[in-house]
Length: 250
Image 1 (cartoon, rainbow, N blue to C red):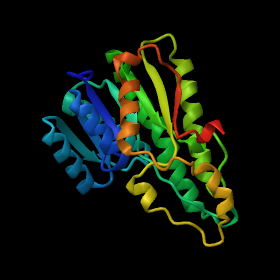
Image 2 (image 1 turned 180 degrees about the horizontal axis):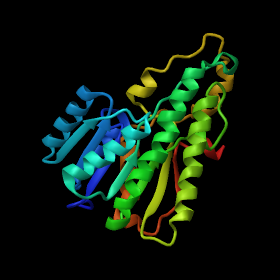
Image 3 (image 1 turned 90 degrees about the vertical axis):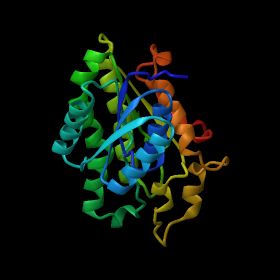
């Protein structure tokens, strides 16, 4: 399939995990990729993987915790490719805390990366996406659909992404712009491999949302993002697509 021939995708979090898998998937279908992350080495590795498939990826190191970083990344993508068809808000941060012991800085950092960056990246990109009749795909989480112990901040941010997606979909329902999100459960990514758990944590409270089907692979989430970003999904707008092995259905 070449669903993204001559189209440009701006992807945050492109240095690893779901962001890298999405860059490779969209590039394999013809997209030109502009990848954004704070991990320069990871971006270079992703670009190399894209090039191996005959694709093209340019990149920039931006701190999306700052509004200016979000706007600058969109400006850089436009300066490079002169158009924008897809915005993939994929960058994210996850941490476990006993709520009473959660540091203030961790709360603000997760809010900035997981939620504010999605808002400001979208705000910067929408004027260009309206011209190209493009779309936004946000990465929410099953944690935005069900309550999860020890992840109050993460749940709050991902619930915010869910409602941000729906609200944008309603605001732009009379335009060609589409806005959707995927809501993964556990995914085998470097992000999840680095999670540290509080020693006092009660695993019985965590087990229900770990699922009984194991972890998804980043490529499986990337495939769903590719569908939502493609013209095949032209009538999909305001959707939150769960990819969690049935966790949210329980």
